[in-house]
Amino acid sequence: MYKIPANTLFLGKQLVFVPECHSTNTLGLQLGQNPSTVEGTTIITNKQTSGRGQRGNTWEAAPGMNLTVSIILKPGFLAVKDQFYLTIVSSLAIYDFLQGKTDLPIAIKWPNDILVQNKKICGILIENMIQGSTLATAVAGIGLNVNQMEFNVDSATSLKLLIQKETPIESVLHDVLGYLEKRYLQLRHQQYVQLKQEYLSKMYWRNELRTFASNEGTFQGAIREIDDNGKLIIETDDGLSFFSIKEIQFIE
Ligand code: BTN
Image (cartoon, rainbow, N blue to C red; front, side):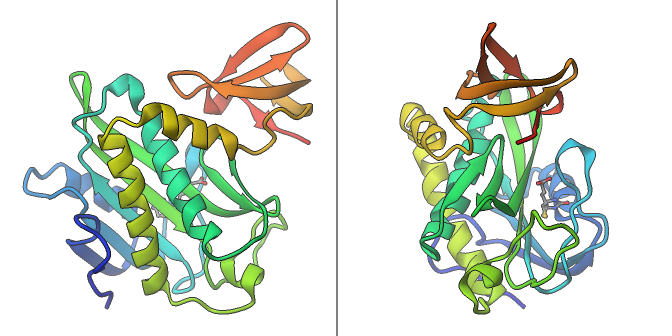
């Protein structure tokens, strides 16, 4: 159903197409446990019946209209403490892809939602399998809204809504894999500083005074940075506070 990409070295060279599945990430985690599964193995489906999102949420996507894909990586070179760099490279890859498609403003909403004109076009779910102090296998799951025109929520958008034309899912797949491979190779070449700097420069709400909600209620502050573990650092009148994904919500 989908052709093997010609524009990559190893991502997508093993391409598993399933017309329907619960979740490509769940399949990816199962395949990733098999030692004979090669790095770059990519699972793509037309329809997920239990697509999974961040924070235990579900991921809804109209069948056949969007990119729902999971890529198996073997980042044995990456220390567990640096696992947030997988979030950085996958977010930047989607940013790169969208930048090639539109001049509209794109931003990465920490940790890895991609927004265009303040609306979410892509969600990423990275699931890691850890062995000792390194990452044996990681599954990068990407849900990118491509040709869907209607959403249940006003905060979502798609490529077609932005550029007013259909894009074949296969070409989106090939482009995304190409960009992801480039960014992943940067990581393999240990370009940590450059990758983090680029991620920070594209971050939604960075250095703006905004309202957030934590377990202790709402507060105002400005996103400054991420720490070495990928925690969000927000500056308030009381100083710097550090948040993991379940501890903070963006309000307005
Ligand atoms: C989020 O924003 O909450 C992350 C959504 C990730 C969705 C993708 S779709 C392909 C892959 N398979 C899944 O079950 N989830 C990811």
